[in-house]
Amino acid sequence: MFDYKRSDRVGQLIQEEISLILLEETKDPRIQFVSITRVEVSDDLKHAKVFASVLGSAEKKKEVFNGLRSAQGFIQKQLGRKLHLRYTPEIVFKMDDSIERGAHIYELLEEIKNEDKLKNEE
Image (cartoon, rainbow, N blue to C red; front, side, top):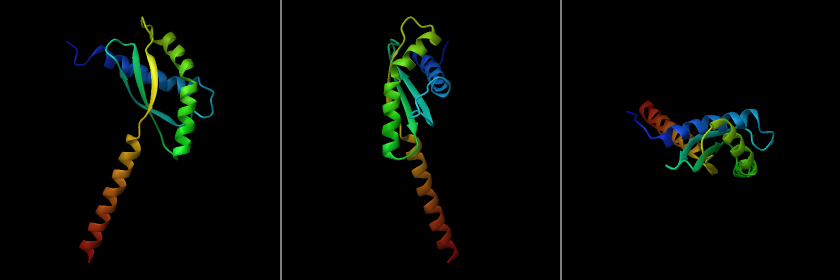
């Protein structure tokens, strides 16, 4: 039948809708350059953890997440209008630093590659 649960499909839909809401409907200047990386929805569809990633300093991240938390009610209200579910999931924003960790690992691998190249040239 289906390869994945309804909560996974709803999570994907929420991710797309929140991305559009942040891009087109929020006016808070703190909420810019935010990537919604994934959404985990409970099986009963009443709770959703929204993981967001922001590149920049720790201060910038804190500012962006304060903006997201202040816009949480607005975003949840917009989701309710767009999703047409019996219950709109209660959303909670969480920080996702996987993009930064991936970039750091890539840099480390490049350093190793460059060191090997220098050793081979000698």
